[in-house]
Length: 329
Image (cartoon, rainbow, N blue to C red; front, side):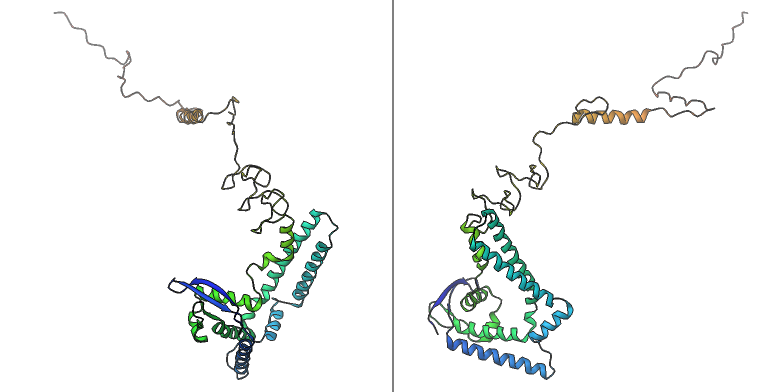
């Protein structure tokens, strides 16, 4: 086995510091891993032939996916056509002889096509774990984990066997070690998307920063059309203030901001309405409605006003009784 190794600093299940070394698998380990793959696949095929519940083959999966319309012959043609379009864009960028703005649009189109390729094939790939071949590949990878993951200080294997790996599977340190081994075996890199030709071109010509965001000549973040944006993807003005698509200032909630709002005008007088006066006027109008006389119907007497409780009632002179005159004796 090759003594080249990659150091992985992580945490164990008790949150203690853990330093692992990932050894690059040599020919002997790879051959033994292939034997584990073959044995596992043979076991799964035999169980399927004996009528036991089992996984399906990749060929069967392809047939089922075509039948239910998840991955059809048309999808395969689309996938191949988009791959060719990516290559055509790359060729034009390398040939040059076009305006820089046109070259930028070509690079952005390449990014869109590559993202569409990933999304399209994900519809097919998500079912691959249901196949016997994928199960056998997982078994081979587990074996290689037991052979290639060691303690950095002592060089002793970290996993005793596949059963020990299965018991620890799901822990953060296992995931960290698995990513490092996958990078050694398959050239997997979490930052591979940043190293595509189009992203390298955009970065090399000042259209992308180191964080992968599109920028203008001044280094300010922009969208694909060149409009200024902030780190949240909102449109901003030259001073960095958020704006809407029309260029109006907005607050954090997206509501339009007006610097000097004007008061509303009274419908009758045309004068500016002061908030306090408007409230007072509303109260007066409410009082007027409450004291307004009710209309009198024809042939009815108008309603009598109620007497004030503090007013002394008066009697008409005609209603007064005259005192009897006293007789002279």
